[in-house]
Length: 394
Image (cartoon, rainbow, N blue to C red; front, side, top):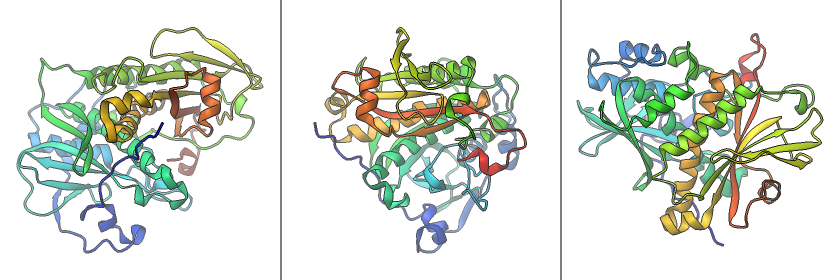
C-alpha cells in the first residue's frame, strides 16, 4: 500500500523564521508589531480554574487574543541545555507549527509566541473569528528525513488542542476543523459562547483538568520529562495517572468522531510492564472495552507504561485521498495532546514519540495487517520538586 506524503504549507512571510533569522536563516525584515496581548485578559484566562470561564466583562477581541497567546506563549525560555518550552511538545525546540489569528475577510496575523504580539500587514480587524495552524517541516532537523512532515503535523494537532482548551476557558465556543485548506491544516473557529452547542471541549476540560490548579499552572507543568536514573521498570506510574491519560485520549477521540473515517480506523491501546523486570507486558485496547492481554517480553520500552495509537491507512485513504496522511497525523496530534494535559494534571511526564519499530509493535499488539502503529505516548514519574528546568524536558 502506498501512503501519500503529507501536505504542508510553504514558510509564510511572518513565520518564526522571519522574526528569528538567527535560528532559521535570513527570513527577511521583521514586520512591525501590530497588536500586543491584552495583559488583563491574558492574566484572567490563565487564572481560571475548572468550571470557570471569562465572560463579557472582557471584550471579545481581548478574549480571543488571550486564548491564542496563552496557547502558544513560551513558558520556559531557552537555557544552556534546552531550547524554549511551550505547552505543545516539539522536537528539539524547533517548533514546526505556527498559529495565526484570522478575520472574517480572510486576513490573518501570525501569533508571536515570544514577543506576545500579532505580526502581519494592515490594522488588526476588530472582529477575529478563527485561528489556523500551519506546519513547516523544513524547520526540523534534516536527520529526521521523511518524518519531518508527519512530526510537524503531529505538533500542529497538539497546538490546536491547546488552543481549543484556552479558547473554552476564555468564554468562547471553539470548533475544530481538520483538513487541508490552502496554507493551513487545522482551523479553530472561535465562536461566541453557545449554550446550545455541543460543548465537546468543555467536557474534555472537565474530565482532564486538575481540580485545584489555575489554567496557567496546569499548562506550565506539561512536560516530556527526561530519563530517570535506574531501570525503566522501577519508574512506575500509578493506575490513576495511567487511567487518566488513556481516558483523556479516548474522550478526545469521541470529540473528533466526525473526522475519523469509520469505527475501526483508529485504535487506542494502553501498555505497561506487568512486573518489576520487564519479563512480560500487559496490553489492553481502551477505545472500546477489551480484555487485558499478557505478552511475553517488552518491546523497547523507554518507560514502564504508555499509550499506542494505531490506524488503518486504507480507511483514511478512502475518506481523504491524497490528504489522508495530513488529516491522520493532525488528528493523532490533537488526541495525544489531551493525554499530555491529563498527565500534567496528575504530575506525570509524557513523551510523545513515533514507534521505533512499527512492525514489531504491530505483532505485539496483535494488529490485523491493515493496522499500523502511528504514535505513542510514554509515561514516567514526575522529577523531584527541586529538579532543574532542564530535567523537565520539552
